[in-house]
Image 1 (cartoon, helix red, strand yellow):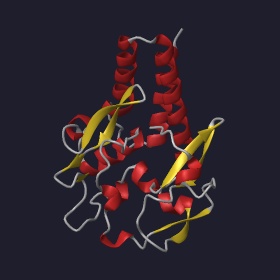
Image 2 (cartoon, helix red, strand yellow):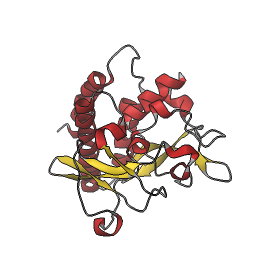
Image 3 (tube, helix red, strand yellow):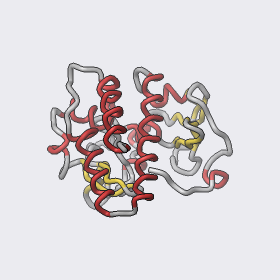
Image 4 (cartoon, helix red, strand yellow):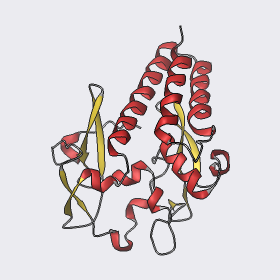
Length: 222
């Protein structure tokens, strides 16, 4: 999901690479769960997020829908998101102690917070959102450590490929300007990248690589 923001107003004015140190360390949150509440439908889930959740919870994508996962239109494409629940509009996976019950498989959006990404020229860099986390006196942490994701190089390549694939789909939807085409592309993405299970014994990135080739073939054929 892309946001129209003035980087000078919400960041420290710098762009970072994965090996840079950034002031994000929050002493393990210590029960603070401000970033897990009131997020509405903004925590959009990518295929890796759903793969991790499905494997951890032993639930299919369809079983997750209607519970902790919902659907919404994101820049013209229907995509899944985490559901906020209860009077406090808190993440469905937040436990009674204000801790994440799926921390080891938490979505990429959650891993990155309070960082964001800016995409340019087929790549991306990170920026720090200075007003998002209320913790004071945060410590410096290397970005790749903060995101705590195995196979880092493959992960960043995946993030980049997924983003630009969606951008190309969105551009074609804008060109076609028909509701049926937008629905067709949304169903293609949901079926190919979310509904079809990722074999637990197989490597996610290898499975994704095959699906992205198939997705481009079907979306941009002719």
